[in-house]
Image 1 (tube, rainbow, N blue to C red):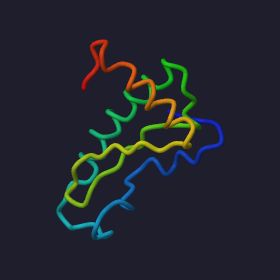
Image 2: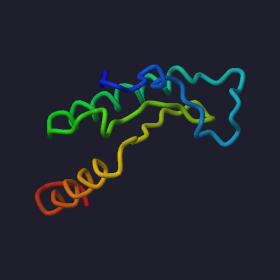
Image 3: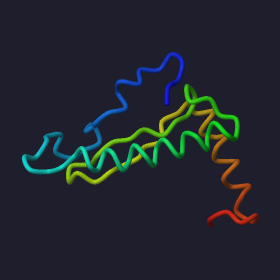
Length: 97
């Protein structure tokens, strides 16, 4: 997935959220990141399908200190507020509570 004006090279093994900030020898960060990347790609496609621009809000794949896949939501405040309203509105219509 790409978006105009965004640095998509940062969609890699983002360890900024890790408590330790260090990579541990023997931990398979790539496998976790791959799993997260697939989930993030799916969420990004869903965001596009409901009219969001990925330059405003997007899912970003990462891996935590244990090598588990993590998907973070990154976005501008207005877009996140719009997404929140959309999700809140889906509660009574088959959406998850």
